[in-house]
Image 1 (cartoon, rainbow, N blue to C red):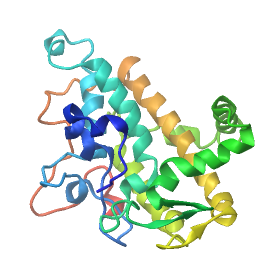
Image 2 (cartoon, rainbow, N blue to C red; image 1 turned 90 degrees about the vertical axis):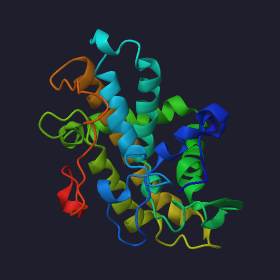
Image 3 (cartoon, one colour; image 1 turned 180 degrees about the vertical axis):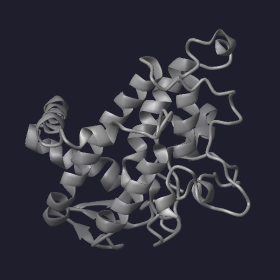
Length: 257
């Protein structure tokens, strides 16, 4: 679990959404599995960030179906989907259960006391913004340029999803926990001080995850609203990966099992 939450999840009427911002994975396993990992504190299945992405993608896919007009708030669904696609690309939103996705790893970011989760949620980007004179629009434009000039051959793979699938959050989560093990947790033990070495070696991964999240959100919305992959599930029963009692492996990401 993570203690670091967006403001809305602290409000009384929205606390139900708190588990939807992350998915915890077993300590040091460095892999992700939907059926094993996607649940809340009460072990209610499908209540995690990957489940939320499936759910809100499916809700949005009903926008032409009058049967669901009064059942779903599609503006809310769009806002949640956009937010959660961002969350799942932050590696510690798929971090270890034992340290609550880095929230209990207390350390210093330069001279500032913080925790590892907050470093990746906020402080790395705040530090990077100094290069752009604290102008976020300049940073966004730089990442957009990198998508067009540095990663054009990668973009088709980022955009792609399985046959007849609108969104592939399991793959995004598997990428995140792999990155967390290789780069995020490394040299970031409790009580340590993270400075230039950590920042300059991790920032390229942060930029790439921001780029991937943006490309994938755009591709998902295109599949929903422009066509090619019309979900129109019989909501809400069959929008999530199937889980059986004799397997913990999900259908989308067998390689992580």
